[in-house]
Amino acid sequence: MKKPKIQAVRGMGDIFPPESGAWRRLEYRAAAAAGSYGFEEIRTPLLEPVELFARGLGESSDIVQKEMFVFDAAGGKRLALRPEGTAGVVRACVEKKNCGKAGPLKYYYLGPMFRRERPQAGRRRQFHQFGTETLGTPHPAADAETVDLLTFFLSSAGVAEYDLALNSVGCRECRPAFQRALASFFRQRSDALCPHCRRRLTLNVLRILDCKNPSCRKEASGAPLITEHLCAGCQTHFSRVRNFLDLLAIPCRLEPRLVRGLDYYTRTVFEAFSPALGAQDAVAAGGRYDNLVESLGGEPSPAVGFSAGLERVLLAASLPPGYLSPPEGGVYLASLGDEAFRQNFILLSALRRAGIRAEIDFAGRSLKAQMRSADRFSARRVVIRGEDEIGRKAVRIKDLETGDEEEIPAAGALSVLTGKPAGK
RNA sequence: GUGAGCGUAGCUCAGCUGGUUAGAGCAUCUGACUGUGGCUCAGAGGGUCGGGGGUUCGAAUCCCCUCGCUCACCCCA
Image 1 (spheres, rainbow, N blue to C red):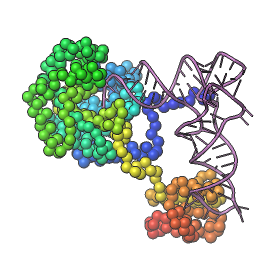
Image 2 (cartoon, rainbow, N blue to C red):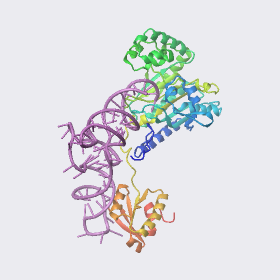
Image 3 (cartoon, rainbow, N blue to C red):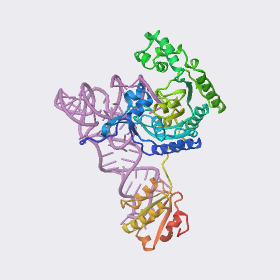
Image 4 (tube, protein in one colour):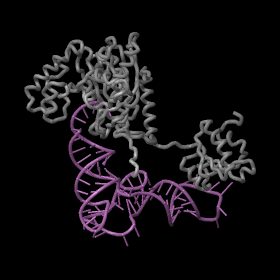
């Protein structure tokens, strides 16, 4: 280590094969699932003005307070790497002034997010999320559709075991009263709360509910429940969402203490946990955000969405055998001598352009070494070409599975190997 | 941001209480009557023991600092 070597940024690792293959397949399944539910892809920038997230996620949220990568751009602008996907999608839609004017907008996104946290199992600084947003409908069926898609995606990705929790956090009509009730409840018991939660008393009472501190937990178990303080509208909405989920026979657990980290959620919230995951066990989460569009400057427009952490999906998935197996098949071209290499090089390109996986040795090594390479390449057949074959205007083709070998005219090699008649 | 554990060949690791040229398996390369794979056998290359400093006659082994990784707290997907 003479020269200081350049290393990847903490929490932002590389993905090599064969894992990269698993990623591609996972992303394909996500896109396919979203597609069949009527969502189309939206791609938004990785960089946004910090104010978007500050306003969108809530100034008091941990993400905004300490987890964003922020940069000073030329012209005094402050930019942030997106820590989540929803704010950007909403910003894009508001900017195009098309927030569900004619029916709901349904978009899915897939890509990297950035949060400056200490890496651990299932948590990276650059991680990847797949999510959907449905803008412009207050209908409870939209909530159910989102949850349905989430469960379909998880099972199609190989996540068999998970716990789906559902709750309603009310709206701006009924939540304040509940928060007051909760605050006065906990204030009477503040001695039993951890220091964090004592601060939460004034900052964000709701979060005391999902504190992991045993003592806080104990107190929280006797706390008033949001579900008993919902206004009529929220109550109806919640029960209709549950009805739709029942119709689809989606198993979920009502969790009156489920709270989300982002401030923009209203009414429905849900979260999927995997027992295979470790400390960071949330594999996907989401909910309704009826006020976000408005608070980002758009016409008031109710919306609902979810997002799944793909690293965690991969960790929680039981991958089918062969999921990580390397590619195989195709042709390996072995050459003996420069002229043989040149002729093989031409054939190589033609094979590849015909869609056949093909490889050649650049190093001019022994035939034995090239055969070994062919085997490692998992080729099905090897083209052998040396001085002898060139003299006869032929090539030898060896089948690596059967060991059979035959000599054919060089001119016919391409059509034999592609299985297509010559001249095509 | 806090805490704990760990950093030895490309990979997985061994190196007891500090002591001769730092090892193994896998991988790679070469060879086994000189143009033929997968098995076997033989051999080779590859490490400033994360980096820096210190203790010592002597350190991969002890101490300090630093960088990195991992897990957990926090929080979240």
